[in-house]
Length: 165
Image 1 (cartoon, one colour):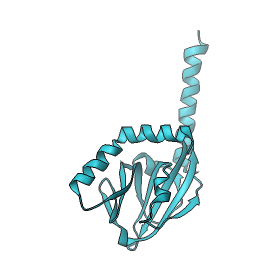
Image 2 (image 1 turned 60 degrees about the vertical axis):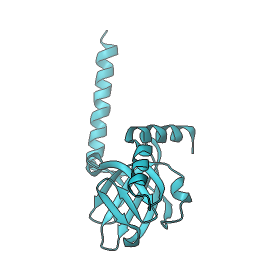
Image 3 (image 1 turned 90 degrees about the vertical axis):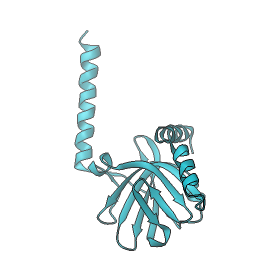
Image 4 (image 1 turned 180 degrees about the horizontal axis):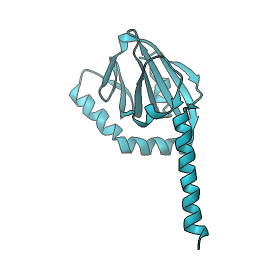
């Protein structure tokens, strides 16, 4: 991992309180070892859809994602390992550096996507069989419109602030 990725991961983990959440979980569930913990944004999808920026991610659940020997826990979701039919880790590059999206499909056809900073602990754990792939991050129409508006506003702000003097 690059220095920028390490700094971004450290900052995001600090904001989410990842270490504190992990310790509290380990105290509350002493018989369940936490293998990996990460600050994450999570969404539930209707199908095993591709990864894309969009409104789902704006309103996503933000919580610490924990992989234990028995389950995946993220906020209000608890997914027992034995109910998982597939688990894919998509490594992506975005505006904010390298990241990864964990895609989970359960035997009852529930689909989850968890976006997080790049973390090699996922590759080193042996409990959850992961298919690791390079992922492509596409953008929804909503995402494109928001980016255009933000860039337009920044150009306007810079012009008003610095060019009008």
